[in-house]
Length: 245
Image (cartoon, rainbow, N blue to C red; front, side, top):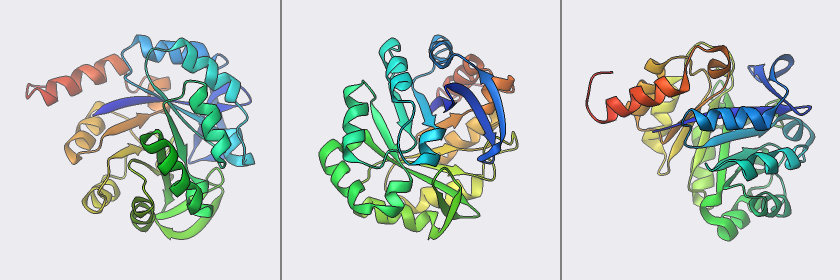
């Protein structure tokens, strides 16, 4: 299982929101590129970047910053937030981004997901962000009547081959992931799932690994020091090798 640090960008800074609330922001760094290099130096296998301004506004606001991050890292980068056109996907891929995450577009423009999956295959990931089991869009500001499990099934039928599931109520809270929701989705999905939201300890990572998720995205817990990335990676390697953690 990959342990994936997250960099959330707002006004050019690395921030974290509490349960996706733009009014409850904590700034952790003024240097996104340096932060990305730091996570890479500790062994991160991949970096997850979220353009919060883009998610709320409907179009990317930090493409140049994300491109700089991708240019200096040796590890792959995936990015989401405001990606609602094929041309935007092409821009990111040309800038060296390995994967783009479609969230709002998957709900409001399913035909875009189908077109993108045909054109870019596994470079496309669908982000399923849910509050109380129901998908939310536009930077988590608007709720829908679509259940997360139904969303995944629908997107699989359109060609999506990988998903990021985020429990909004747990995101940025330093509590715990919604293990039951993740387990339920794993039983129904035919595709790999990356879990996000509430990961606060190595024990959480180990439990997610046993559920079979492909990866776990960590944000606030890395910035606060609740999880040390190098220790988490070492612990998971021991567990996967069958040794004591």
